[in-house]
Length: 557
Image 1 (cartoon, one colour):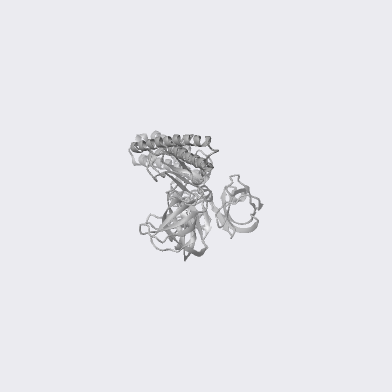
Image 2: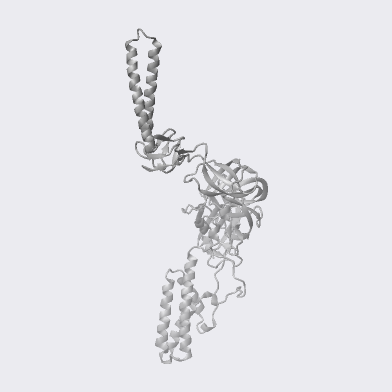
């Protein structure tokens, strides 16, 4: 082989060695048959510690130490705390990172050297002072052994190690990988073109492609190392979630406590108006509807008792009209005759008894009243007035509409005073309080009013009053009522959103076992009220259960 070609091959071999994946070269103390680590090697070195009040996670990146501080029971970030770390380099005073997520940062140059560091963290927050101890391990970088193919150049390993370290510090590693792959191809075409069909050329081309792929993979690895930690799921189903990701997902927990809870029954119900603050406007006689002054009031208008909502003018058949007209003429004739008689008696009042004139005047007044009532009955309509104060909830009125006798024209309710009617298919002694769950997830606080004894479609009606008015409720709206009974059950009460359904149909909750580890637990539950469920089996007391963000944890793969 000519010297020029030998030198070119040496340079190319070094480039291939430098850019090949580091895992391909063994190092001391490494067991290729060992199981994979529980966390990806791209996860930054970290340590954790906890007490009854606080939980802290320390993450080392280069010469910076990041501290994540949470409340132990709720996993809520704690801001505004004062931290002091006793380290091998002295006392460190972390400062807030400015992200408002309970994280603090401090410079720690000693973390650039591999080793095992014992740290004591003094925490002062929420009128509590605590001291936690943690051990942070900074692993050593893998040592690169001298490869047999490079034995012809004794200084190749040291040169490759320095070059790789420099390349790892650059932000353009991918472009360097592409450049090296391109140079490898150019050298192969220039030097080995006459022997392109020989196996050595094919082998060199393959090595060039491998170098390019290895360089790209290592570049991606370097970029991941410099970025954030990534959440991942373990083979046993547990989930590793770094603290920054927990902040994004708003993960919250509670401390499971087993207590006695009243058994709850689930009943179908609907919203009804309070009979003491609602009313119906009906017609006493049939007739044609006419609006009052200003027109019919629109739905949702607040009215007061006594307000006129509509007029009803009864229809007058032809026979009745003829009879009333004849009666009116007869009354007019009687009034005229009696009026002349009263005038004559007044002219001779001195020679007649006074009682005769008074009787004639009273009879005349009665005839005139009857005549006036007859005219008013033919022309004056019936007024439909509001019986109570409230809001116009329903209306069935139009100008000229014929209303049947006793038909409902308007419904008035008080939206601040509503009831719920639930149907029970067995006699249940419900307690004074209950909870209603609307289809969109809103809950209502209910108070028991009374239970009926008569069956309604083979069900017993139970009435509850809504103790606190909720906007958007409407009459007839369906909901689910969770009524408490005298029977008690023992278990752990958690919010309904903390329980999720697994792929096999089993109910699951996530237990917060470590600062950044969550383990799914199969549980048996039953409804407790509209917002909570009762865990009867599957979880032990004094465990931290995820109450917010459990559904998001289940999606991590």
